[in-house]
Image (cartoon, helix red, strand yellow):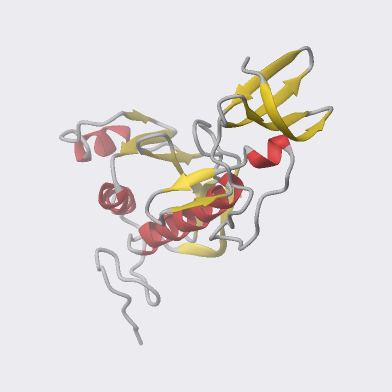
Length: 219
């Protein structure tokens, strides 16, 4: 460990310091172990999402992420909340553009089922006319996961035929369909294909028209 030139902050959780090479560094204690980091010096910066700065404590300073599209440092926790909101809107749009008719209270955030770099919520959908179906959508590291579960037997061969040309992770069982989608467009396409396999669904009378890319007022 490099020698300390200036101790900025120190407590039982760790310290923030400038080392002998004038590098901003943070050390965090975890029991008998101490981990060292060289994060960006955000002491005079402001998160462009929440408008707040960084508390001068080791773990608080490490709550940072370089948002390159905004050319700004942000709190990692703020960025995760923003991603969760953005993904929620995308998933709702995918459902609204399909033949599925979402219940008014039919979207529920659930715990991230994958983990990885971002701890964003996944979302579970329930539908009118399909009370035996739940649709869960969430973001993995590089793909979206779409998981449709049913308490009634599904025609798994029918679903398999519809996706036989798609070179993605996929699984078709009597009680579930699992798909990975590489991008937003494929996510919307797959959700729509799933919805079209339920022949007894009535046409929507309000909201979004399946397959349309625009909001259409009906009636």
